[in-house]
Image 1 (cartoon, rainbow, N blue to C red):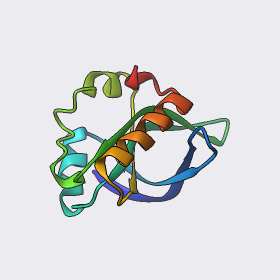
Image 2 (image 1 turned 45 degrees about the vertical axis):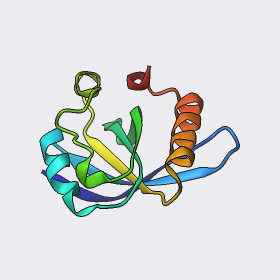
Image 3 (image 1 turned 30 degrees about the vertical axis):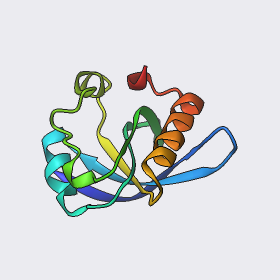
Image 4 (image 1 turned 90 degrees about the vertical axis):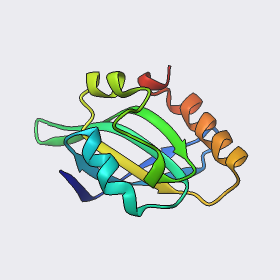
Length: 121
């Protein structure tokens, strides 16, 4: 299962620049891999856990990554799969970003350093 949600998550970098991620619910990393085959763009992605407590929605960021092509990234064999699974992630976010590889990696690094997701450690 991979389902687009009517929700976004906004992350800020150290300069306050906002990056808005379109969120998708998923049940396995295999389903993520199959679903993004149509996304031949570059950009940033996140893994997170969304949960409801006392009727309120909460979001727990676990991982920030970057890719030059979502369709070929390979999520089912992701190098941080164990950590992503251990944090019970159930949402995947996409932020399309058309910049140079170096700039995309610079943005990813800044977001990681600013937001400190546990699986990037």
